[in-house]
Amino acid sequence: MIPHIILLVSITGLVFTYPFDGYFRFTLSVAVLATLLLYFERLPIVRVAAASGGLILLFRTAIKYPFVNETLLSATLHNLPSFCYYLTYGLLFRVLRIRDYTGNVPALVLLLSICDIASNCVELMIRRELVSLSLETVLTSVVSMGVGRALLAVAGYYSLKRYRDFVLAEDHAARYAELILIIARLKAELFYLKKSSGDIELVMEKGYTLYQTLNAASPGELARTDSPAARALAIARDIHEVKKDYYRVTRGIEEILDVAVTKEGLPLDEFFQIVEQNTRRFISSLDKPVTITFDYEGQLVTDQYYTIVSILDNLITNAVEAAQSAGVIAVTGLCSGGRLVLTVADNGPGIRPEDRELIFAPGYSTKFSEVTGQMSTGLGLIHVKNLAELLGGEITFISVPGKTVFTVALPLAKLAVSRESK
Image (cartoon, rainbow, N blue to C red):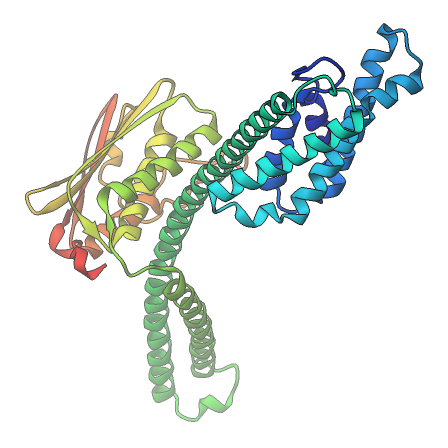
């Protein structure tokens, strides 16, 4: 980075004006150098200033020498005081510890002005070209230019800082949106892990009951490892080990979520914006001609936004996958009649009449991977149905060729939290 900064300062050093007769000039590069030294706090001040001055000396000599009747040594000596200016500027910048005053604008402008004025005075004394001019004329020009370049440097520094803060804020918002979606999906997976744990517990009980029945029917055969009772007991033990593994996994995920998940409520408009940001990134990654709109209205603040985000994510993903050429999707959220009503509508081919009774069945799917040929797991809609019912709500749909609308209605009594609880 340092070579690029030195080159930038040197190039802007070619933008100049002659305030007096002679070789002395005012350049834009001083303001650029000060701005960059303030903004990039790890830059070595004296080394960058001296290197910039050296490269400016080289540029000025190389540009002017071919067009004047001077020797190379003479042309170099005429421009050498400008190098002394930059060296003095770097030394004063460091000695005055100007970076320590970035929070105090008046002091920063004053110190930069002093640094500039003093460096110009050093250059003028070395040149000895202005003996015919009055001291008042010289100082007026030098002081005015010093203050002007100091103001320009401070403005440049704060502009760069504000732009950096803006970029960081945008990046933070994007990462936060991704985190919300990841946690929502993780909580959804945890829901199914817990459900599977209950199923495993039931199977284990049935296995143990089978063992008791077989053992009662044939007492004394348990000692034989190949007897039906012994095998039933072994199966029950194996299932018990699987159940313990499931418990460890679910408990580990719960502990992670206890740390990562905030207990505060989130307004409807905020988590809708999160869903919108992630959806638009998802669509752009597919390079698919899909137009999607989001509309939401209401004053809901809820701590169940992870579940709602998961519901919307699944419905929107299904709509995007169903979209064909010139696909249009509309997502809405409305608080009305004591319910939060979420709708996802698309202009896809619709759901076939013979499939409408099956779409909420676990494992049902009409989608498959074009790469592997494997069918989808078919958990999207049953997952949405389970989550909606978990919050005391319901999911309905209407579908005709060219229009499919899924509607999820959730009672506000199960969602709303007071702002004071935040």
